[in-house]
Amino acid sequence: MISEIAQGFAALAHPMTFLHLVGGFMLGLVFGAIPGLTATLAIALLLPFTFGMDVSDALVMVAGIYMAGIYAGSITGITLNIPGAPSGAITTIDGHALMKRGEGTQALGMSALASALGGLIGAVVLIALAQPVSAIALMFQTPDKFSLVLLAVVTVTIVASGPLIKAMMAMALGLMISTVGIDPMVPVGRFDFGSYHLIEGIGLLPAVIGLFAVCEMIAQSAAPSSLQKAEAVAKVVRPRRRDFLPTRAHIREVGLIATVKSALIGVVIGMLPGGGASMASFIAYAEAKRSARAPEKFGNGSYEGLAASESANNAMCGGAVIPLLTMGIPGDAVTAIIFGVLLIHGLVPGPALLSDNLVVIAPMFAALFVASIFVFLSVLAFGPVYLRLSQINRGVLYGFIAMISMVGVYASSFSFFQMWMALAIGAVAFLLRSFGYPVVPALMGVILGPYFEEFLRRSLIVSEGDPTIFLRSPASVVLLALTALFIWLLRVRPALRAAKS
Image (cartoon, rainbow, N blue to C red; front, side, top):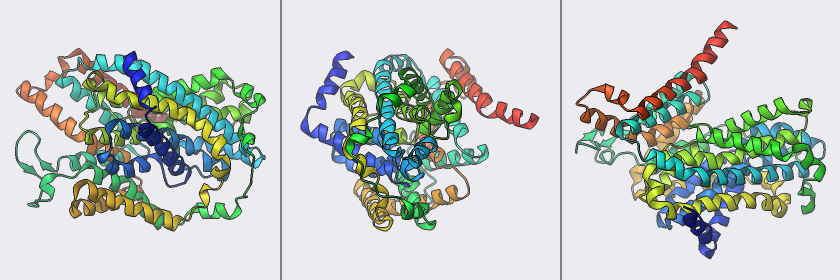
């Protein structure tokens, strides 16, 4: 394994591979810093362009977008009190308070430093744990794999924001979309309504573009942007690049141990299906406040709170990739789209991926590590520019993104029908969001649906319809027990406590 990882780092020395990493990182910075645009949207837009790329270059570019996009969500959060992405919401609390105190450059510098350290720790944990976890997962049989996918489906549903019934309906919608087209085990069309277009099924790319890109464009055009009000009062400053270097006093205030602890929390949360950067940020922030010497500073401009949130955010990246590569379970929305990138290139995430294709995947590990270093270097190089990103004209920006989305869908399938399908899915996703339904479970349903159905049907065929086959394997029983435990801890027990109070 060590030799393969070394080859992954060596691959970044190739000029084209390195340019893909830098290009992806820059794209992630822009999309993460502008409110309404996220790393998820950036990778969704990139997806059709990965067809013509070498698989290692595509994964390197995606890794750069991922790491930069998660960090950059804090930029406008600190400067304008409007987080560029949900992951920057907790950072905004203390970051903008520091900005109002005249310490905005220091806040941006500390945010970048903490994100870089968190990203490095997450990448190291990924490199250390991916192979052992994959070796264990190789022993899984078909019933075990079904229980694993069931765990992912249930966990993604119950950790989604909003009422449980709405998350369940969104997941059900995604699972329904995944069943359209040819039956995977019998050559018969399903739910095609006699249309030769639907007999081919609904592609992953139209689903991704519709659920994220088209939905976001409709949402941005349907509601007035509060950012424009913020832009009117935002002060244009011209700081020096050295002003973004955190001072020793601020670094001592934060502490290395607290930063490492927050990063490890982020890694663990990232490994949970559906955890995501927002949850990692919140839990790390809460723990930092609990153990802080001066918890009263939190919310009023605490560097410790700022660092805890940001280190957990980026450490989550490495953690979220572990279940994706080893068990085929996306850890968050971004890794769900990375799942699609792998499938496009014929790589099926799961236990055999790292054992058979570690040399292909290793550059992605190295890219996450190097991109973490880029995070801190970026604030020194582009710190003054960060304060101006929010002034980009919204009409031009979103019009360009809408065009790229549709062209990308057509280029991937050469089908006008798939373009209309992406628009239809986007309109449905917008309605879901408008009524408080989460979109991520729907995407997870589209991706995990085929595996859920395949493993369920194969298991029942082997057992001749006996459902107790899922209770005969120790691994399957453990996974089913974990599913029940998550339901109890995340939904049932909180509901009981709320009822008592």
